[in-house]
Image 1 (cartoon, rainbow, N blue to C red):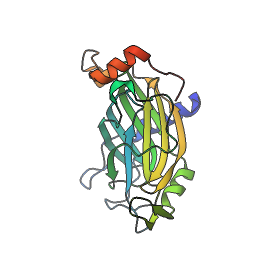
Image 2 (spheres, rainbow, N blue to C red):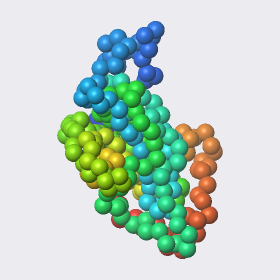
Image 3 (cartoon, one colour):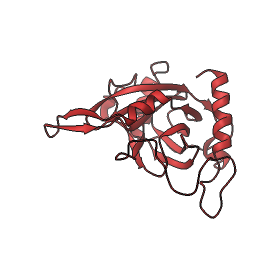
Image 4 (tube, one colour):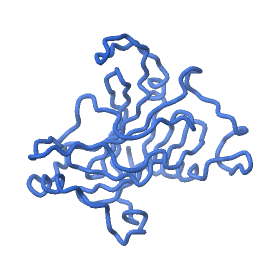
Length: 234
């Protein structure tokens, strides 16, 4: 994302990030007609998944992931907590690069809002440690993929099903890297975005922890002390 686009995304998302509207108190700036939900997805498929992962040993703690949907509605803390990460013993993990078809990571299904237009993520990269934030613009071409049903063969049970690439998996890596894929339970993941975030000047927990990040696990700490962080591989 170019600096200009990043600035516009930040400006747009900051305007939108107000508490979710309720019927008793509508806030100006978010475009919502009444309190019913109208989805841009197909009538029989209104849910999507937001998940987070990290390279092996490069542990991540997500402080918040906030979503602005295509109708300018906001869902705060759509994601938070530990990102999915492998920490094999004996330093057998391979943190450099990304897998060909990453899984969706740790997260949850989203049904409170429509398909996303912007996703804001603030996270602690425990391997460094450092606190980053990133504004991820989801293009319309990605939403078209999410809406499209596809025939897929599931090897797990040997059946053909109708599947959707409606799992948004975000990989978070040291250096502020956020990479985004779309996938489904029986469909190969496709990359839709890569964003380089910025350091959050307030530090971890928005400056409320006296600069202290969450601790890195002993397994990851041992790997990083021996092999370092493979910057530039993500």
